[in-house]
Structures are given as C-alpha cells and as structure tokens.
Amino acid sequence: MIKFLPIVIFIALVGFLYKGLALNPAEVPSPFIGKLAPEVRGPILNAESEFNSADMAGQVWILNVFASWCRECVYEHPLFIELAKAEKVPIIGLNYKDKSEDATAWLNRFGNPYSNIVEDQQGGVGLDWGVYAVPETFIIDKKGVVRHKVIGPISGESMQQEIMPLLITLLEQDS
Amino acid sequence: MTRKQLHPIQLIIGLFWLCLCSVSPFLMAADALLEFENDTQAALYLQLTKDHRCLKCQNQNLADSNAGIAQDLKREIYERVVLGESGSDISDYLVARYGDFVLYKPPFKATTYALWIGPFILLFVALWYAMRFTKQSNRERQTPNSEALAAARDLLDKPDK
Image (cartoon, rainbow over all chains, first blue to last red; front, side, top):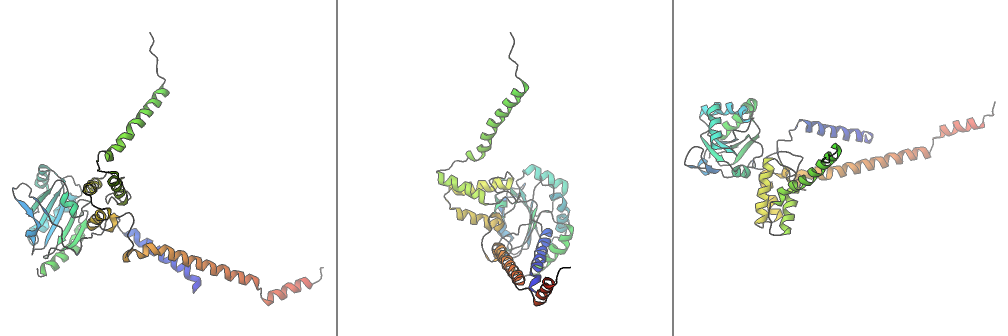
C-alpha cells in the first residue's frame, strides 16, 4: 500500500492544481460579506440633497458601482434596467470617480435604473467599500449586512441563478 | 568656416546619456514629492507600499503599480503615516477593506495553515519515503537469497570447458 503513496500524493496535487485552473484570481473574496455595510454618504447626482445609507435601513437594496468611463458597465446595465422595472429592490448607483456631466450623458444614453445616484468623485466611498474594479455590485439586507458581492459585470445567468433567488430570500426575511 | 559635424554614433551615444540622465529623476519624483516629518515615517511608507498588493494588477505591490486604485491606496497610506498611525494599524485598515489578499505575505492562521505547513509536510513525507526506499533496497542487496547463492556456487564450481 505504502508503495502507492507518492502516486496518491501526486494525484491529490494534480487535483488541487486542476481546481485552481478554474478559479478566477481577479475575484478576491470580500471581507464585508456577513458584516455591517460601510456607510455610503455623498451628494446625489443632479440634486441638491445628500444621500445617507442609514436611510436604507429596513430595506433590501443593491449598491452598484459604475462610471461612464467603465466599458464593462454597459454589459450589465440592461439587467439593472429590467430589475428596476420590478420595483422590488432599490438600486443605488455609486458614480465612482466620474464627472457629473459625463455620468448624466451616460445615463441619458443607456437609461437610468437607479433610485438614487451618489457621486463619489474622489473615490472615498469606493475605498471604504474596498472597490478596486468597476463595476462592482453589493447586495445589502434589511439589517444593513452585506450579503453578496459581484466583481465585474453581472451576467444574465448569474442574475437569474444567484442574485434573483438571493433577493427573494432576503425580501422574505424580517428586518 | 566649417562647423564640426557630429558622427551619427556620437549623436546616438549623446542621446542615450541624455535619456539616462533625464529619466531617473522623473522616476524618483513620484515619491520625492511626498514630504514626511522624519525618515522613520518615510521608511514606514516605503515598507507599507512594498508589503501590500495592488488588487487591480495582482502581481505588483502598491509601490510598483501605477493603477488608479494603487495610487489611491498609496495616498491613503501616506496620509495615515503622516498622521502618525502605526504600520500595523494601517495594515489592519487595508485588510478590513480588501481582505488578506491585499497582504503580499499571507498571515499564519487557520485558513492558511495548509499553505504554510503543507510544503514542509510534503518534504518530510518525501524524505521519509526516500529513506525507507533506499534502506529497503540496501537490505535486499546485502542478503542475496539462498537459491541465487547456490546457482552462483554451481557456476563457480563447474570446470571450464
């Protein structure tokens, strides 16, 4: 039996390496999952008022980090437009390191699914949320806990198979 | 009056030196622009930017990277260093936001035991196996079996043709 030990170890190593091939190194697990969401505060785009994430308490909401300079944001945008039509979950846009006029023009072109858009021209809010690759999307539950994070554009498949079921479960939970 | 003509090779060498002389100060300018109260702070800043990863370009540390996020994190580190925060506080701040992955050297904790200890275990298993293997083959070589001995004796005893 002991004769096969090197072969067994070799096969186990190959197994690990093979699994490693399928992992995406760009997807860094967020340390926020299961923790209270950091604050989002900042001026609302094209409005005089200020947004404060404390006002979202008791609601399931989505924070979508986007920018007009972000090419991949265009791919996931139609999904948010569809999601917004259901009017079940407010989508807050964090306009990351962008200019107000560029963001406005971009939204006029591709549509605006956001119930509020927070300007983060310096990227300070993004830094607090550990944003490093736009677009990023966070799902926050009624207690203000971050439940899910997507790095990069959301695919239609992950919207249907991961995000929608999660939103439904979260909406059913008590605040 | 004839003007002295530069040989093309001379020109190239001259340009080469000009480039060398002009590039290096620019390279240093990025960090030289930052002002620290003392050398300890400057050293801490350099150490922190070396020890933390740029998440956008994952095989570079913050010091080497020019990605937007690396610039932001460097500015954040700089501001905190100047405020007098300790290196471990700043490191904790980054880990709280970006997770352990932001550290170039992974911490030694439950989820990384296999990473740190695994290679040594593999090494010991390999050594143990190699020793066992060589011992066994030595033993086999030292004690030839009786049949082989008898066959050998037979051959030796047989008179030559």
